[in-house]
Amino acid sequence: DAKTTQPPSMDCAEGRAANLPCNHSTISGNEYVYWYRQIHSQGPQYIIHGLKNNETNEMASLIITEDRKSSTLILPHATLRDTAVYYCIVRVSWDDKIIFGKGTRLHILP
Amino acid sequence: DARVTQTPRHKVTEMGQEVTMRCQPILGHNTVFWYRQTMMQGLELLAYFRNRAPLDDSGMPKDRFSAEMPDATLATLKIQPSEPRDSAVYFCASGLGRWNGYTFGSGTRLTVV
Image 1 (cartoon, rainbow over the protein chains, first blue to last red):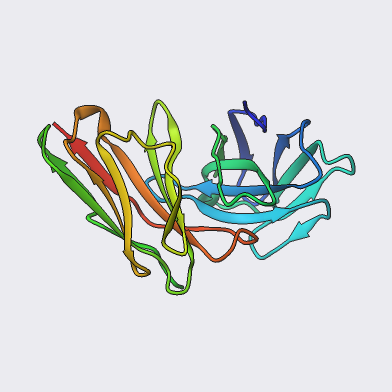
Image 2 (cartoon, rainbow over the protein chains, first blue to last red):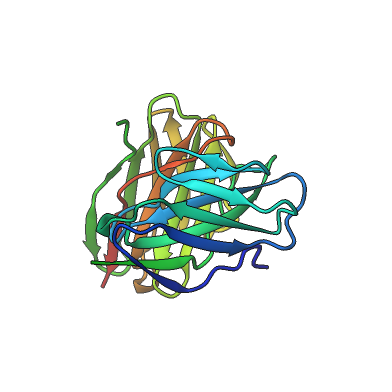
C-alpha cells in the first residue's frame, strides 16, 4: 500500500522556490516524514525529516500541515543541480527501513 | 564528507556466473541496507543489517541471493547463479540509528548477459 502520494513531475524556474507537495493522509502519530532525492546516476541523498514541526536545514525546509496529512518540501532558490527525483517517505518511528515510492521528477528550467 | 564505498562500479557478467558486490559503510554506522533499482520496479529494499546482524531479507530472492557482513567495515551481496533479470543498479546505504538520514553509495551497475 502506498503511504504517500506525489505528483509524477514538476517544473520550476531556476532561482525560484521549488515547492514539492506530498500527501500522506493515513499517517499515524508515530510516523515521520522523510525526504530524499536522487540525482541522475547517483545514489539517493537524504534531505530532511520531521514529525510534526516544520524543519529547516541547509538544503531545504519541510512544512507539515497541522493535521499531518500532507507536507511540502521547499527548495528556496532552485538551481539546475536540483534537477532530480524527490521521494517523500513515511516511516514508523520504531522501524529502520526506508521504502521508496515513485517520487516526483523535478525539472529546473534555465 | 564521509562516504559509503561500493565496488565494483560496473560489472558485466554472463548468465550463470557468480557475482559479488561489496560495500564499505561509513565508519561507526551500525545499520546497513542493500537496495536494487530498475526502471520497472524503482528502488527495492533487498536486505538490511543492524550491528552486523541480518534483520530483514524478505526483499531478496532467497534461492540465489545472499547478503552478509563479515565485519563492521564490509557488507557483501552475492548472486549465484546470476540471471539477466538481475541486471540493475545495486545500492548500499548506511546509517547511525533510525533517527537520522541514511547515506547511500554510488551503486554497482550490474549487467547480466
